[in-house]
Image 1 (tube, rainbow, N blue to C red):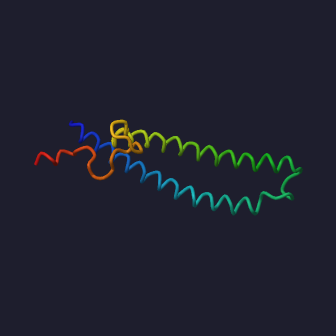
Image 2: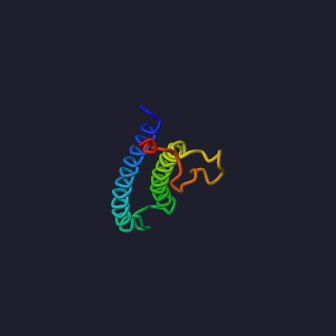
Length: 113
């Protein structure tokens, strides 16, 4: 497999992963709305024996949300590394790490035709 085809396959895979992440985030948004409704009706002072118990419950909910966001951030950073490798590190021509981006990046083999 040529380098260009490998890069193209990496980009296609990255696009598929991004689509799946978008679907996950959409489902998480629906789930978050349900959790919000539930917490607004159940996490109030009357439902707990002490303020400390209420605080522990809300912190545990918050920790789950933070863990999910951290996991998605790590995944996106991994995808960024792959994309950076495909598009170039920018060390040759300076710039922002994504090459020239003016359409003069690496060739997909079409120049030979």
